[in-house]
Length: 297
Image (cartoon, one colour):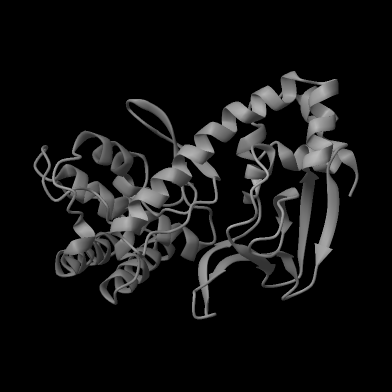
């Protein structure tokens, strides 16, 4: 892999979104490409931090050992995810371990190389640190959430951009909800009791959405692939999956619009995966135009 290919790939990574084409070109020269086989360890808990890791292809699991020696998986990282950026801030040991679950190719930026870059091109690290602050803030939010909800998903720092009538927002890549749920979380932070506390309500919402998709298909308003994907997503939710992504507060204004949109977005994003698309690629399955078709709150 040459520096041109690395430059093109880095353009997709959130940490480097503020860099110009030329700055990314300079940064590309400092990365090392490394390949790992299945079950190879990248780093071990309590070992010194050395690198920022970006997954070019493959899959990496982050895990931690309990006091009894059992391994507990924290998250799975896939293409374009990054981790280990704390190496540029302090030299404390790793608090977790990581290993490749399949054959994996990584881009690695060592702390030594980063600080060498800082001396030659100081504006590049400044821009990276600005983005890094947002990533660390989201990971701190995860830590707070996990105190209450042990099923919360560790956030890789990767995001996707979504748009509504109020503008654009970055949504954590891992979540199945979208921008309107994000706004609901901000506007109605009231009781601290989320929809996920009431699985029967979530199942009921999925039943309604599944029935609507079937009716809309019969009326010729939804194509068969989209209708089938929505139905499958609803069936998975009814069977207990993805309940952790129903996150809006049970107490809210707006006649339950946030609850409705939370369901629409989770179903739409799961349906997109079933169809073979990325979460947030709503032109193929939209929370309002497809999942909520012919419905009100």
